[in-house]
Structure formats: structure tokens, C-alpha cells
Length: 373
Ligand code: SF4
Ligand code: SF4
Image (cartoon, rainbow, N blue to C red; front, top):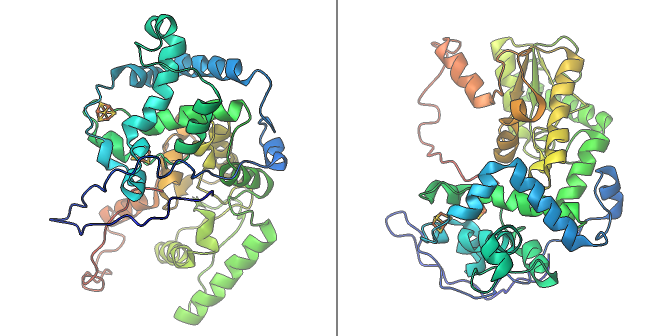
């Protein structure tokens, strides 16, 4: 990342649970840019390795294609009334004070180009229509600010029209990827999925090794032979956790293993696809679809009946799109994307834990959800 304006934002304490908006700091995050992609990763994910010739024309063609394919995007381009209800809802604005990080201001970067090339007013009278050319300066702003949106969709909850800025960010990133402009953090991760089956680039032997290590940890803790099976053909359940659960957040992985053991569920992970996360969501539609398809393919290869997604905000946001991305799931039970929390609720309702849960064990803990990454 390039340098951020490091003057600290003076933060007022929350009042009645509400964090006040920071003072406006024009251009505070204008120089915060992600590292650009490496050619070796781009080759693996079928994207241009450098800015394509005639990039402006190609970008506008791609924009037109997206508008034709995604009716919601076209509606979002037209219906914003600049009410400002979303302005202080984005964590990137709250953290930087840069007004270009208002969700509406971020979306305007795409809308200005939309008006210039896709509306009669913008084509004829760009200044009157607040339209702008897609030039080097605009591309620079896109690259800067569309990569300062985590696609969390928090702002859309507050928009009276339900405008989903994440969809707008995704469109801008897809156009940029198409002309050879993307960021290393995302493309490197997607390339690792195609090479190793997971975002972290953990090779199959290391995945298996780590599962055995966790089995030993659990044995030491509980004295029980609780297993973390890998590539178990004929298992009932394929678990697709975020791969970090097997390497960094291992308590979560241990929790899954204990849960399935307690319930007597035959489960497995897959070394073809041991990743619920999907960075295609942050890049373009073709990679979103391709990464998602690995989950279905792994489930078919192992012959499981059920796919369960482990907990991960963006993994689940991509996971729930599975029927749209890769066809019906009617060969699985349930025939729709299924999250570990849903599985827990179903087990609770079926009485699997009756008489076995001590509700006082964690009643001193206050829990909260956070906006997904
Ligand atoms: S989707 Fe999230 S990160 Fe993006 S503009 Fe909205 S609130 Fe900000
Ligand atoms: S809340 Fe919705 S309509 Fe209002 S400015 Fe934001 S995106 Fe536009």
C-alpha cells in the first residue's frame, strides 16, 4: 500500500452506542493504492497481464456488457437521489475522513462515466449532465477508491432505494480487470486457489499434516480420538471452511471436528477445494464462478450428500450465489447452500443436544457480529 495521510483522526467516544462521523479530510486516502497484480498470477487466471491497447474503448464496451447483463446495475446508475443517508455508514469513510469514501461519492465515479457514454444528456452536454470521460485520471480514481470498498453492503442497508454499492464496486473492478488493471492481493489469492485449492496456497501434503497435528492437539486436550478426515470418499458431509481455519484460526477447525464427532457425522475436507472463501467476488464474474465451481466439483468427486460452508463473511456471500453461478444443487441435501450456523440450528431443533448443553457455560460472554470483511 502507498502511504496514507497518517495524521491521526481525532475520534470522539461513542455516545449512546453511536460513533460520531469524523471531520472531513479531503483527499486523505487519495494516495492509498493497492499493489498491482503480477503477470505470473494473471496468466493463471486468464486476465490481461498489462494494460490492453485501446483500453478506454474496451472498458466502455465491457461497461455496456455489464449494464445489459445486470439490470440492477443499470437501475443503480439511474436512481440515486443524493439524499446522503449512506454518507457516514462506510467504515472506509469513518476510518479516513475522506469524503470520496462516502458510498455515494464512490458510486459517482462509475455514474459519471455511465452518464457520459450511456445517456443522451451526457453524450451531448457532459458538463450539464455531470458526466466525465473515462480517462487516465478517472481510471486512477477508480483504482484508488473502488479498492477502498470491502463490498460489505453495509451502506445498502441504509439506502432508502436499496442501492447496493458493492454491486457498483464489483462492476468497476470487473471493467478494470478486463483492461489489465487489478490488484495483487486479489489476483494472487485467486491464482493460489487454481494451484492449490485454497486462498493461502497450502499444498495438499501440508493440509493433511496440519489436520493430523490438530488431531493430536485434540487428543491431548480431550483424550478422544477425534479425527479431521481429508479426501474421505463416500463421507456424508464436505466441509468448506476458510483455509485460514486450518492454519491460523485453528480453534474454529477444532470446534468443527468436535461438533461432527459429537453428532456422529462422517465428514471430510477436500484437497481439491479446501476453501470456502472466494476472491473472485472481489475481481470479476468469470473467476467468481470458476472458484465457486471447485466446491461443487469437489463434492461430486467425493460423492458427499451435503456441503457445509464454514463461517466466513465473504465466503458465505459468494456461497449463497452457488445455484445462480453453477446450476441447481438438487443432488445435495439440502439442495441449497448450507451454512454451519444453519446446520447447528437444525441440529438444535432436532434435539441432537437435548440435555447435553450447559447454557451457563458461556453466559458471561457478550457476543456481537461484525460487518463481513
Ligand atoms: S459496500 Fe461497505 S465498504 Fe463499500 S461503500 Fe458500502 S459500506 Fe463502504
Ligand atoms: S442513500 Fe442511496 S439514494 Fe441516498 S445518496 Fe446514498 S446511494 Fe444515493
